[in-house]
Structures are given as C-alpha cells and as structure tokens.
Image 1 (cartoon, rainbow, N blue to C red):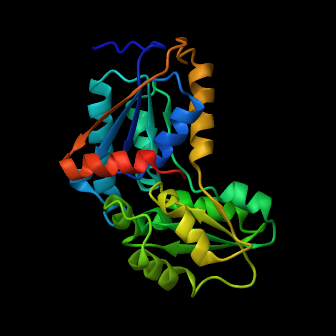
Image 2: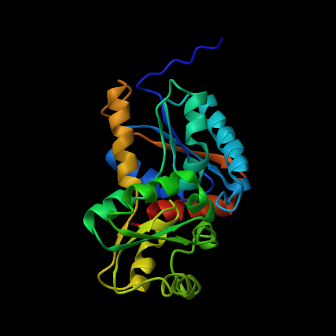
Length: 263
C-alpha cells in the first residue's frame, strides 16, 4: 500500500471543467495569500453542465487523480456541477484528504431576504441533481426559490466574453421572463457566472442582490486546513501553477484576462 503523507508545505489542488473555477481561485488566494495552489482546468471536456452525472463523476475522478499526482494536501472542487455529481465519491476515494465542494449560495440569500423570491442561475445538471433539490427543500418555507437553467452562459466566459451586446441579449432572454416585483436576489450557482456579475446586475435591475458561494468555499478551506494542521506556516507569498487538459495559447490568454478581472 502506498502511504500518502500530508504536510503544511504542500499545495492545495483546485479543479473545474474549464475557467469558471478561476473565480473561486481568486477568492482563495485573497483569503489565503501564503498558500500554494495548483489549478487544473479540464478544458478538453468542458462543459460539464450538459453531461450525465456518471460522466461528470468519471471526469472529476480523473481531475482529482492528476492533482493527487502533484501531491496536494487538499482539493477544492471549484465547480457546482462536479460537486453535485462527485463530491461524495471523491471523499470516499480520499477519506484522508480535506475535500471542499461548491454549493449555490441559497442559504445566505434566503437569510438576507426571508419571504422573498430567490432566483438560482445554474447549469441544467446542477439543478437536476438531488443535492440541489435537498437544498431547496431545506429552505422552501423561508423563501420562494426559482431555479433558472442557463445553458450556454458558461461558454461566454470560456471565450473570455464577460460583457458585450450578445451576452446582454442572452441574459435578458433568460432573466426578464422570470424576474418579478418580488425578486430580491439572484444566486450565481456556477463558478463561471461571477465573471459576468456586472452585466447580470445591470440586466436584473436595481434592488436585486447577487450572491455567489466563493467566499464560503474559501472560508471552509481555511477552516479545514487549520483544523487539520495543514495551513501554510510560511510568511512568504504563495503562488499558482496552472495545468489542465486541452491547454492552448487562447486558454492561457483568457486565464490571464479573467485573473486580472475585478469581480
């Protein structure tokens, strides 16, 4: 049997189906500036949101294996779809490893606006999974939760399109039919969506607050690393290593653009 040792000087692994997890990575590095991170983007198989749960589980296990080969001390699943389909399986495969998943920020939205109408923008698979249905059931008596599948939105971000008339038209077509006078908040239930936060807010209109789960993910990682004695004890600033499937010059340029974008 191969023994896998964990230590505080190892990097944290982060993976996503593409570039959306960069929004999570930005929050992780802001909260934990001394940690080292390895980001794995499965560009070759993106998007995950339209795939079957079995396929997403298989791909997620492959991503985790790539990160484990790099000797990571924790894994962040920076993808709501992958979390819904594979978090339990990954934790069963690697019970010794802190594994933090993504979850639509329904709780903070409902807490902020009890009795209001909360729209949850997400991929079709995230909304179809039992994990999301259980989340809705938990808060169904506190607010009206409106699931809104957004096929195609992720692809805008993958192309580096975080603004523009085509994206605005897409969002108006999705949001305008479901926003009512009772809508109080929109939950961005995919890690790609925060990169379009500004234009989503404009289309939604005044008086509607946007929520995403990235700060919660970063706080949970911090808590788990500290609890496990794995938090970086160096005062030096950490760094990020970018790897992935289907890497290209265009993906590298879009990665750089998104990492520089304020969200």
